[in-house]
Amino acid sequence: MQRKMSRTLDEMSDRLAALDLSWKHTTAIQACTVFDFDSSFIRGITRRGAAKDGLTWHPCRPPVQDVDFEMDCHGLDTEMVITP
Image: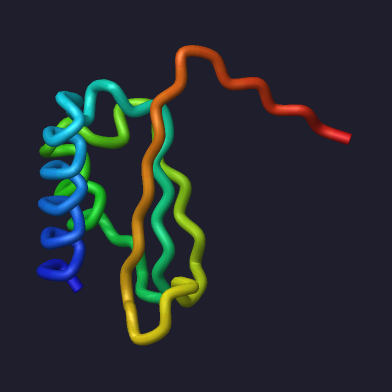
């Protein structure tokens, strides 16, 4: 799982760089996996400067079939959360 997470982070770093952005421009990161999100996952993510504003872990199977780990990120100037 560590290798899968690292490959995902590499790909996301490359995609951010292609947009002339980096992890410092992200304001939210989400991860989906049924595997335990232990301290090695956290270190692997934070070592790159990702998750500076936190990380939301969804302990579920990712929506893409045959994938064990999925991650997304976004960066906004202002984010408004409306609760019912």
